[in-house]
Length: 210
Image (cartoon, rainbow, N blue to C red; front, side, top):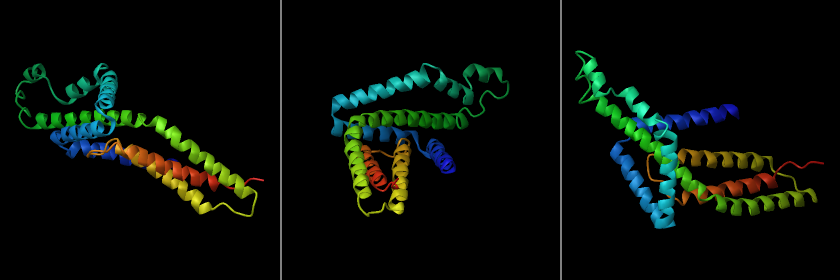
């Protein structure tokens, strides 16, 4: 399980690297604009504004006010003063290499901001998560209790694959934080329903204990 988790995290990090390496900064801005329109259409202007301001506040606190974003830019891109101090190398990469690096860093930070915004949007569904998960979990426990009173046997296959479905749905939701295309807000409740159904099956098919 730990090896699979590590492998999944490596794939997610690889996705982030590929997005930062190959996706254009114009495309990331179009993704943000499209998702903003989706949020307004689904949640309304007020809720979209709340999500956007919360995401910006978190991003500023984590990366801007700490100086992390500025430090990353300065690490890869020399300042004008540093250029003048490098005799003979003042113009190296000025019009090709460093503009390209800056565009990749812009995409990286736009991706980080969009990831935070999608996470904030996911948090907006937490009350819905409790409302959905609770009845599915209770139903699964009741079904398991009923099966203990008769000759029904839990299905090891259903138990095993329900775990796979839950882990897969949660992993897809994690991957959705950094996908390089617009993610509709309806994806979160769909994922919640899948996890709730899998949890219901998992609980109902948990091995009986004497």
